[in-house]
Image 1 (cartoon, rainbow, N blue to C red):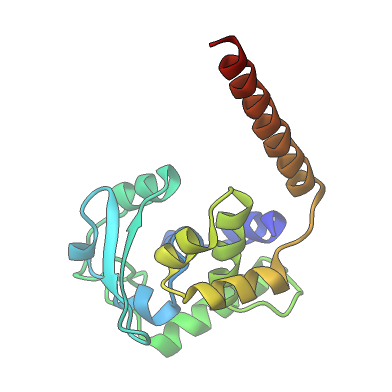
Image 2: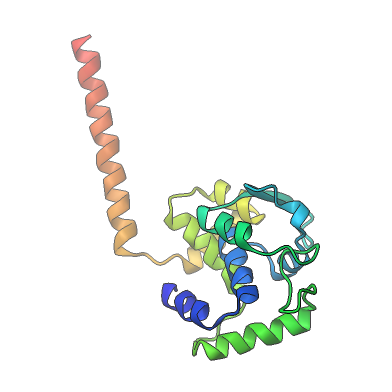
Length: 183
């Protein structure tokens, strides 16, 4: 939820905040992000081979992620580093992440992995198709759809977006029919 992200941002160090940004804007697993090297970033997109699925994914950066990566100091071969500049050890990252979560006073039972599903729902809310989402996150299309079936809130904004698309479609069809009749 946006309020969770805002609370986390207020409590996070720049190193942990960059991890949050990468997770939200790429939909990748924690292990893949902790291992992500600067060579995977070409200034406009991240290309990586996922550890679990072995899928090769190409993730163009959002403006916000590009700004965060461009501003991040390159202190190691990996993008995500601990405060002293060394690559994160999984256990230490988990401890610092949990401490930041607690400092943000987020009481819901949320975990880093939940950000992967959040990325899927954010992409869907932005109007992305299931194949587009699966291409970014590396999920199968069926799994991306399962995530959406479970977590995508049926919100007023989605309903309004659907009707606006329907109106545009009908308007375009009527315009096309009118053009064909006058031709």
